[in-house]
Image 1 (cartoon, rainbow, N blue to C red):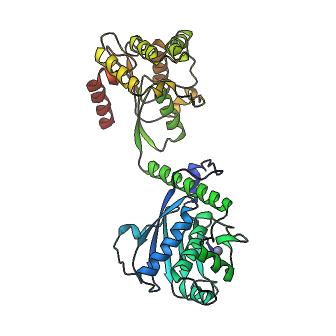
Image 2: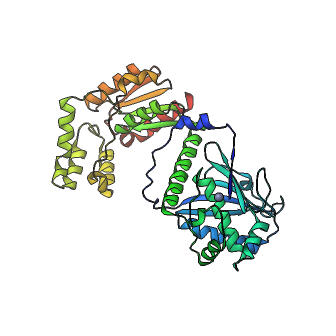
Length: 395
Ligand SMILES: [Zn+2]
């Protein structure tokens, strides 16, 4: 079956902007990726045959870790199930499939069973399956029309997902089908090769991630990050300035700024009980720590103890630290309104980092909150929320 490449130069610049996510392709994802396919019955096949075709195709895609949701979008342009989703065409999870009677299309042979249209990027959304050529092929071997149409549809949809050069010498991606393929289709053994399954899973998950990133880019967000989370928020803002419109950093640190011995030794002391697996001791040490919560923040201390006791795995899981990025010299690149909140009893290093961030980020404003430590949102939740919401609404 033929793949036609549409030379449409759209979207490439935009997609290049987000880069290509590194995708592990050695294994199928644990959770199947979901895609939607809008189905149009322009050939008058009827609901039962269409359903059979969809089921046959669903089974093969399920074996490749892809869950297909079919939207039945009517016959000859008239929608049976009016759904606004029917018209959606977006790689990789909103695809379009038309069953037509005859092979039609520029450069198509009359015996073509189907066609898929790919853009230069190798992505595609539109496939056609031609019923008359499929029926002629079927006259050579008895197989239900729904099954063979489903297999041809699978081949064409897979072209959309696999990109260019998707054909193989055997299996469902074989370019020319004869009696052997019909026999296998009948037995349910006309399927994808392992490398095709892996490539499809990788391209689908990369495409889904790219769409998510683009959606985020269209809708800019405010990020509130606390402590090391503040460091990650700074890094994210530097990496994706187009996605972030406001930044709230609470007791944050910044990569590239050194820590004092005072800070490191206190961190080590807090972690000591965990080296012996003493979770209760670690929680007690955290509650007693004079920088995490200010003296007198008794309700916050109790709350911290409850939260840590309820999820001890948060204290004992293996460290999966992100590599430190040297954001300190790049703070001047952050041009969005930035609110820095620091508790007045927080550790000296956190105050030093807050000062450095304030000096580096042109639109940063630093606010010191009285009688709070590192966990001001536990200590003074009402005041914390009021200050953050006011900032987000007015900047
Ligand atoms: Zn093909």
